[in-house]
Length: 100
Image (cartoon, rainbow, N blue to C red):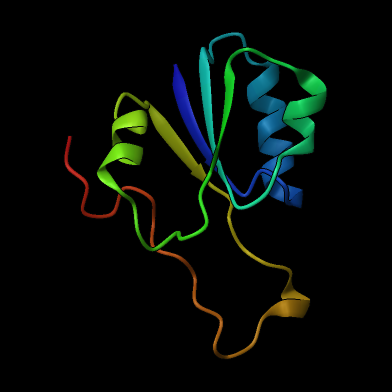
């Protein structure tokens, strides 16, 4: 099973990543992240691929091609409550408007 994860460096995302790494049914994990994911560097798990991606409102066809065989996505991207203002915009879901 191929899963996509966003927000892997945060509190929720890192817990989800831990669960994915422990699950033997997960054969591939594609992580979209704005920064390095230390947990993956420490785990050195061959199932994990971290893809640096900074604009979560735009997805180039090349990126979507890397993710098209995914079975699911956990969207854990966000920010701390202390950083939220009225202007904070939640990024669009990864596969919004994407058709297989």
